[in-house]
Image (tube, rainbow, N blue to C red; front, top):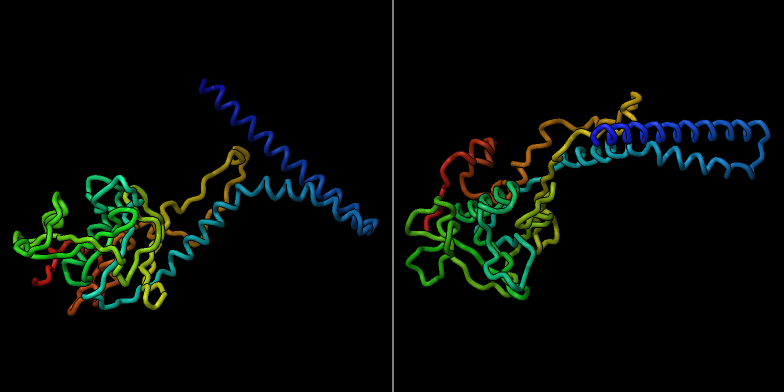
Length: 285
C-alpha cells in the first residue's frame, strides 16, 4: 500500500511537471508567432498557457510570499502603555452558548496561547493594571470579574480561578457579578477563545475607536515543499522570516505589556520572561 502511495505521488509529480513544460513551450511558441507577424488579435492566444503556467507554479511561490507578508507584519507590532486602573477589558474568551453558565476560563483546557493570555489578564487585574475583566456569560449578558476581599458581599468564583491559580493571598478572591451593559472601555480583538487562538491579537480602545496595542507571531516560518522538489524545483522561502517570530509569549502577555502601573518594571525594559517568573505584585485591597 505504501509503495502504491509513493508511486502515485511520483506519477502526479511527473504529470505536474509535464503540464508546466507544455504550458511554457506553448506560451513561448505563441509569443514568437505574435512577434513575427504582429497580429494584435492573436494576443489572446497567450491567455490559456499563461494561466496554466501561473496556476501551476503558484504552489511554489504563493505560500512563501504569504509568509513574507505575515513576517513583515509581525515585525511591525505596536505597543502603547496606558493607565487603566479603573477601566475594564472585554474578552470574548469563548463562543457564547445559552447552554453554558459561567463564561470564565480554566487552565486545564484550551490551548497554550489562550491559557497564557488568561493568566496575564488576571495578573494585570490583580496587580492593578486593570480594574476588571468582562467576559461572556450568556447570549444576552456578560460577566464582570474583579479582585475582592473574601469577606466582601461579592460572590467569589469557585475552582482554580477563585484564587488566581494560587497567586492571590487567602483573604482575596476573584469575584464576579452580572454585567449586562458591556461596561469595559477596552476590548480584545482577534480569535482567542477557549479552544482557538489566532496568530494576531489587538487591544482596542472602544471610546477612541483605535487600537492601542497589536501583536502577531508566525507559527511556521518555512514554506512547505511541493512534489516538484523531486525534480529540484524548490519552493520560495520567505526572506523576512526568522525564528524569533515564532515566539507567541509577547502576544499571550499583551495585557501586562499594554496596561501600566506606577514603578512598572516592564516599562523600564525588564525582559518579559524575567517578569513572568517573578511573584505577582498584588495590589493592596
